[in-house]
Image (cartoon, rainbow, N blue to C red; front, side, top):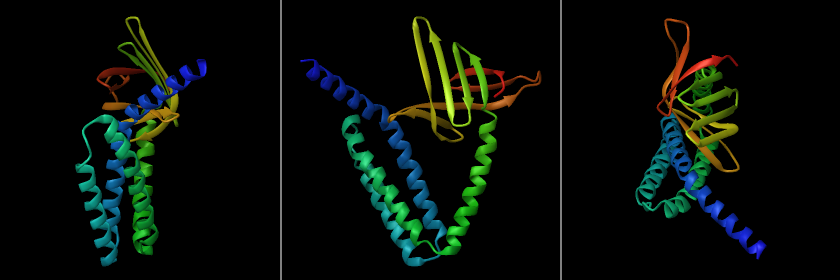
Length: 204
């Protein structure tokens, strides 16, 4: 009986994990389709460009036909994002050398810009019942609201200018960046995450 109950709990957690990951899969779809679009623009091979554009159109049509139900949508979207990633990997391998060089330079510039952007987030921030410590590749988050306490201590999975995601074991949490870190006239640093204004109280 205990084994059966444990199996039910496992299946419940697995289902919850799928729901929590739907938002992540939606982001993966957007990011991988954006990469496919970049690959199409980068290549100078007419035949390959046509193939990439056709593949992109097919995936867009498949995405548009996904059901609205969260469970069904996740079950179809997850393998779809995997196939898009595999298609992108194949297209990248077939890109001509000059296009690869263009992509490498662009990616290096983007990575350098993002590295500078992320550094402003490093440190400990507090406000509105929230305390969050951000270091390279890791986040420690605490939120106290009434009798409810939320704690997240996990590695960063992705970082963009509009949001960053943290998580482990397939369960991710997304933090929306409403206002990036900025220094006020009094010298204090402020930012707004998930509509909560935070003040930096310690450097990294």
